[in-house]
Image: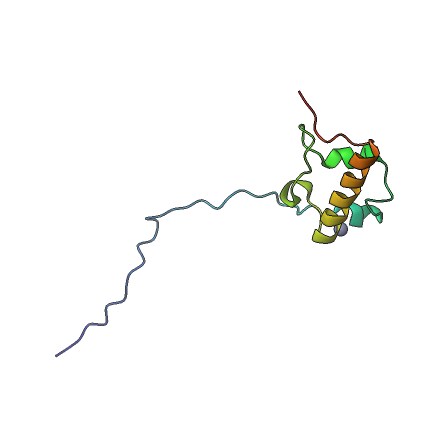
Length: 91
Ligand SMILES: [Zn+2]
């Protein structure tokens, strides 16, 4: 009795998923690049990290490291409280 060791053949190219296209150069954290902290820059820099509607950009969109993403959120919220950064932008 010969038992054929049947391995599950991976039918290749059956599911030919193309890998998602990502940017070749991983953008470094803006604040690490500049050597600044979000609390040190003016609101003209901080508004760059807002969406058109005035929401804070996600880390995927902003490209910041986790530390500076949190610090940025704090700085923006502080700016909103001071009135220098809008809570929302109505189109
Ligand atoms: Zn950073």
